[in-house]
Image (cartoon, rainbow, N blue to C red; front, top):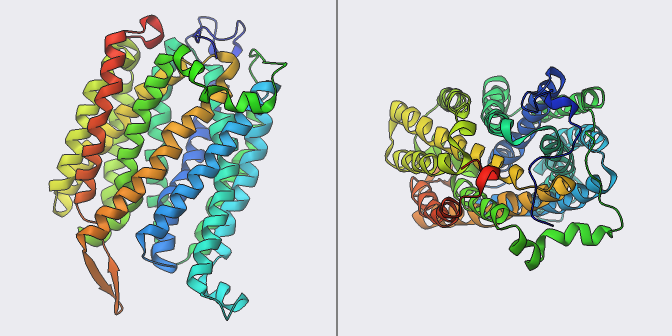
Length: 447
């Protein structure tokens, strides 16, 4: 990987004549695919954990293992399919077909129950087999989803955008996880609370598949440089070579910052719904989370307009400060009102950190390796955080020893210490962020 340019391909139909404006078709594709992709990841990252907790086992290590295994599957998929899409110069087919099969595997979770497993294998440990089955299905779903969304769609976003508009685009994409959470909480939470998991997964899976069909007609492949004469394995492993890291310090510093931020979020995020519902004892947790997510989304969109003007690197450090303050506030919050205020501060900081980091990574991405960089992003932003963060959170939860009784069954409960642990991890982000500020990567970083 040579030192990246940020001008992109010469032809750029979707970006408009001035290279800064995106057309209506491109924005429609960005919003629709970005939103529905995050809808699927919300189910996988949060509600699947609740599904396991409520119907299979309350062991936080089972959740942590599922998260880590799915992250590994997602990373392999993104590295492989990202490299293939770079070599073919095509993204649309991976996006459209990928979303369809992604939806099918999501719907399949509705068929998995402990009673069903016990019926198939009456002599075995039904709970253990159910845990293994849900982890295996989660890995398959993550592989397909990452190939479609992280490798195909995210690389296409790099193809279709320019440094002049990436801050705005990233601020919109950064809102999608929050809007997706809000949609799931508002539209489908009643199904999960009533135990209607099969209907829940069927509806979400159907939506994902339907958008995959629409993507075939909406997405247009951009004319990007195509690398030829390089073996597939070489393309997959290119970014892991020390020489590549040395040649692209800006890219890897941005990825390192993303990784630290990701570990911090994964310490508490897999357990957040359980924490609000069981530790804070807030019955209307969907309303609390809905207010927080909607408010944070508005903050991200409004403030995100200034990222391109202020500069990604200059914007990043204050955003980290907001996120750190929010984690501390969540540690101290008790009651509905305090939880809403603290959650709004924390999730606003969460989004304000994500947008400039995402834009920096795109700025430093060579246009001929946009898909491959998505594989690197998966390693730094998904795999490492999900291998480390949930286990840190599980250790904090287990060490606290907080429990409650549910129909005579004693279950472990997350405690506020998960937010302190997340804050301690976040402190490490100062190293790559301050290094980026010191190096001042010219116009590519818009510093």
